[in-house]
Length: 363
Ligand code: ADP
Image 1 (cartoon, rainbow, N blue to C red):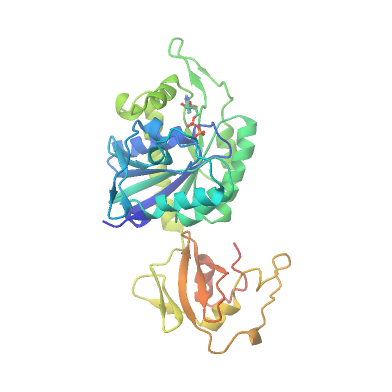
Image 2: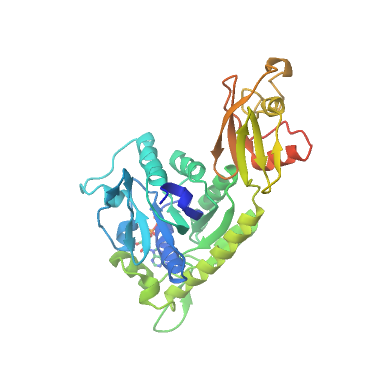
């Protein structure tokens, strides 16, 4: 069994601009809905400071270790890991961001998941350092932004969309949570926090609208009690919205995967980068061209886009020592002159392969 993210076919981050919009609730119920549809599912609770997945999923079991790796906890067939089950001291997690990032890195690389169809990552709210690091290190195949319909939430949700765009993670779409209250007694739906804002935001941001989840006391109660809403309500009532959401997420993820420029394989052979964009037809890149096209701020002026690096500054015998993947969208190249700060986007490398010399790879 391989540890870490290699065991997951799809890795989807669930994000929000602000806290309290129901991002963790949507993650939990989407996980249960995907499981109900027959997929193997894992959840990483990315909120180190305020983990809520143990409560929502309904398990506070302590994880075991095997061969130096963490075995995830399982609830109703959904596997998960959270700081909430690691830190059982009852005390708040007080730590600086670099330490929190280190803890998250362990969740990304040190968990023995087994084969997973979907790994969902419940990101902490906001768009800071931790969220960005996760978005890059987790090699995400997709991202979902959860919002509520009020203007203040919608405006901040835009930041989440921007963040994933910046790091080239395919945005599967926007979910509008707490979209309207359906009264069980009179049958009427009241848009307590308004309605339709999520769809409007999706349209202005040109991303998909994944659907609405109603404001429903059953959703709140199942989360509070750690009860599986989907099996409890047999896929109807409040559970149906999450089953429908699972369908749109599955479709959106498949479409996004067929759109990415991720190569079949990358190797460094005799000091040169060799990429198979399609299996069986490797393309070798001239190292001088790659070094000259380095997009980092030392080689290209960030403000003007003017090339700083001169061709004569590059050693004629320059070679590549290794490469390092960055997210699913690009890689850093380590050159024999010690330079390694440029991120080469796959889309640009692909253009370069088809002959058009690229001077800017900037993210
Ligand atoms: P976030 O992860 O965005 O901080 P949570 O998922 O913790 O938000 O949800 C905040 C609160 O709102 C919780 O008490 C949760 O049960 C409740 N909640 C979330 N979504 C709904 C919903 N659709 N209907 C009713 N209550 C909800």
